[in-house]
Amino acid sequence: MEEKKSHTKNERSLPDHEEQELWFSALVADDSCAYNVDKAFDRFVSRTQQKRRTVFNIPKIVYGAAAVILLLIASTISYWWGERQLQNQFADILVEAPLGAKTKLILPDSTLVWLNAGSKIVYSQGFGVKDRHLRLNGEAYFEVRKNEKLPFDVMTKELNVKVLGTKFNFRNYDEDEEVTVNLLEGKVQLENYVKKMGINYLFPSEKVTLNKLTGEMVISRAKVKNAKEWTNDGLFFDEMPLADIVKELNRSYGVKIQIVDEQLTHNRFYALFNRKEQTIYNVLDIITATNQVKYKVEGDNILLYAK
Image (tube, rainbow, N blue to C red; front, top):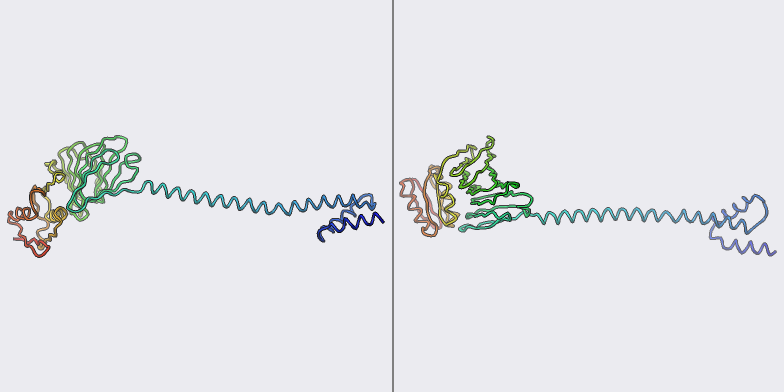
């Protein structure tokens, strides 16, 4: 009777039907076929523990997979954030000269730049370290600090200028008919984007004029020092079309001049003025003295007619 009580007590400790099956299986598997309750129960406990280990290892695998996924997500976010920070660090820098004024600046590589009225340049924050590329819209005078390892590139839509160290004036407003470069010192390389014609070079006291419509490029000798007179408030027009002269006067004096007779647009003029010493009307009086043009003021507008 004591042996039966012991069996009843152990049987109440079984948690469910599955463990009961394992319990009776352990009894049957006894080679001696003796009714040894303690030994059978030990076998049952051993098998039950193995079963439980198998069941409870599954969540660990799930947790591990989840941890890997979270790590990948965190790495992706970290990489994306780093890329954004890097892009912000090397975001382009824009420098502009307002209408009626000019701007002087020193680039990170110690190059001196003057920007004429209504002009702008754009360059990266890595300028002078990674490269020396900049984009120009308008007119600028450059005194480039020499660096043979990093060529200095001034890029526009129609013409690209590459130098190592030199002084030159580059004019290319979007609305102008022509692009001009005047070289004071050194040597520059020219690449024409309008008409593919190979690489050309400019030498001191030379000027290049590029027609934006045809792509024709003409190199000639010139009084190149006058090309930078605008840095001292001068206005130098070297056989410039009247259409471009009008645009320059509008930018420099903040006025509204219009050419009424279209045949005047291609008339060329050679002249040197000073913005501080001469008003817009002084300039117009000199231009009309050529007997090619006359002007009339109507409200805020100045209209040019053929004589």
